[in-house]
Length: 213
Image 1 (cartoon, one colour):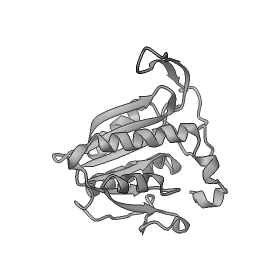
Image 2 (cartoon, one colour):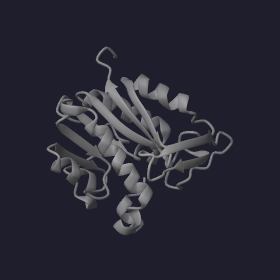
Image 3 (cartoon, one colour):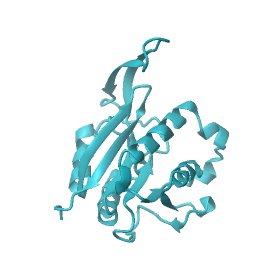
């Protein structure tokens, strides 16, 4: 797995409009969990934007990453036999992370995260589709209306990003397989969300299944 700091990505390039849409939903979904969540662990960081926004809204946030150059609170490699403090974090969040290593290792990481989180895991993963997205917004209609037609690229094995080992929707990785892996890891799927203006990021809010294992 290549370290993100080795890719020479500047913040000005990373923080595209689509990326900021994704940040909006990351925050919104964490906020939606209400006062059940106070202590958050963010795994996989590039900048401090999400951490700072959460801290400014009263959350206690710790960070973890495999890349020491990002100066996380803890060095964490999800592809190893890692361990985390149990029942310390009300929510563990990781966005666009799991696809950066082989699928079987992603499944093992999910199982360990299920053991570690006190209540929730909030994630996003890439969803590779062919899509048509339409938005209608007028000065008198209030919220915009959207139409999204998307078809998973089940005939293809090529991820959108060459740093990814897999993406949901590609051949061998249907949504059903990913959702089954989540449930088998020890989670209940609390919410699924896709933004029709940027359907490449697929969000899942997962609740720890206290009756599993």
